[in-house]
Length: 284
Image (spheres, rainbow, N blue to C red):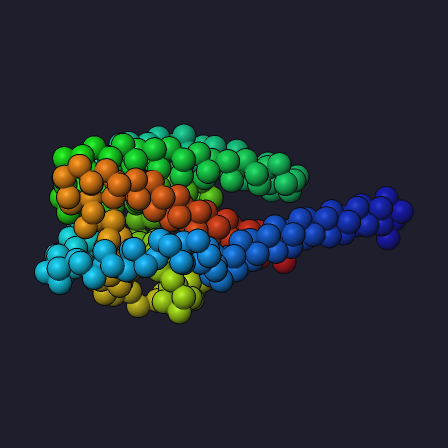
């Protein structure tokens, strides 16, 4: 082998090692963020002062309202998936997000620098912030009017808009039933707690891995919508009950942006992880 060829080979090996180190560090950071969410301890003040009040409020919620809320979320997801996605896509510039991803991804492939990966993160973060603001406005106005259940399809539309944009920010589409299942598991994972959250997280990981490996997995979208609707309904039960009361409802409306931020954070972590794992496969 010529000297120049040996130099090129050594340089190529060094570059591969550099890229691997960056990917490993990024994936370690993601792992820490995942564990922080999955093992989150309840704040002492919240546990001693807020949780008992929320528990009392939950006990005040009539069983019929709980059933109505579960049904409203279930029907809301159906409505948005079946008829609302085209409308949702008109509220953001899908082509611009794709173009920005393509440029950032090209830069990552060329140089694999943290600043290029951070650019992908910025797009995802901007999406979450904007949609939380939209949700705050929507939740606050409807809360003042004493509306709780009728705004659920609007709220779900903002949630799905958030996840759609984050998916696009990392180069993923969302039209297939498999990707819809992945998104629903994401929402359930973000909004549930303890063992239920860990089970949703397991399904997120399994579904994402199978999709990215090109495998076919059986999807019962109806059942997954039911699971996610129940998780979201349980998490928001007290908030939506309060939001259904005139004047007091603005308090419930304040919850909406917090939910968008929570779902957006979890979705950003999971889509970024899929993106990074895809790059590790490309290097092999």
